[in-house]
Length: 264
Length: 268
Image (cartoon, rainbow over all chains, first blue to last red; front, side, top):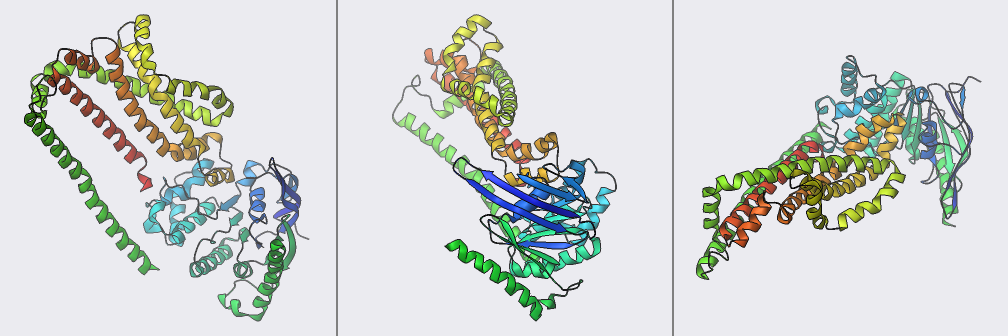
């Protein structure tokens, strides 16, 4: 077996409040290969967002180990490793006092890597996402789809090897989301990052990922790992392929069962 | 897609035009109202035959203001000096303390009760004593202005820092940004609208305190002149001084508001 880009081993996360103890994640084992595109689906509250926050060292796990490029990290992932990652938030989370360009270039400035070549690099990215003419606009003047594209570019400006995406297109309408999904596949096929994609949208997960972890709540845990057997580059036509529908039905049945359990 | 963008642009233009209309209304309406109020005042004073030592007409007050301007100006300058010195020191102290408080909870717990004490105690009462200790110069007055200005700035600054979106902090964490980078790139700009609310309130507190301090002690500054002219029944001149105070404080508030508009221009 080849070395995994990201590996989580028996990751647990417990939140303690005065009144109760919540097990957010229980014995999470995840493996993501180099340049692999995986998705994590599950109902809200299953801890899927917590997983990528742990990979990104925003949240510390209660116990367990993380391996990145084969190096083992316990509770703390060092700075240079974290900076190999790009994080895309559910709400685009742009800073309203910075222009589109300013937001995209923020990571370079924070890393102290902003230099004369940076401007051209931003230009290329702006062009790629069709945002060139909005480069000096403030986020408040942009539509939801545009702000999310800025959010994607901000996570990519420093050429990360890993992209962590937290329901990035969840707030968009279905049509726009599909366009963004296809755009994302194009970008990934060109730039070949390793992607961990969080979503509660089953169709989106099957369309994008080669491997899907399905999660359950109470405690947050992985109930099934599904390998999606469609070759890349993927055509949106696979959406009506019987095999595709079989995958989504399988996940729907899992998450459906979960919902019933939740109600009881 | 391009069609919808063009639609957006058109929509934006419409909104902007509406805003422009509102802007003119915003400026003209209060000016018209001011003239109406002055006219009413003038009419009432004449109609009710109010004696000049009780209340002067607006025209009389403005006449005093222009003819006695040479007499009023030096006092206005002294007030302005107290006001600006106290205000600048006050907001600097307020912002710095607010920043420290919100980043170090222990300091916050230790200082908070004293700040409430400062806000609730009428410090005016201490000014005569301070004058005995420190003389009748600028110092005791500036200290009073600082003491009345900084707590409100500090409280608003602390609120601003405390209410920064968790997602924005996560963004900086996801980049493993240093504390300093997080402070200047996210915390300060996020808190800026609140800081400006504090500064604007501080600006009002500083003005009223300046005049009140001059009321209490000393014989220079507009406050002392208002008291003096009132005691000698020179109501017109007293009002001329009050108008000068009003003009100074409105101009001052306007300048701060303009600075705010520039600093948080992204908010629109």
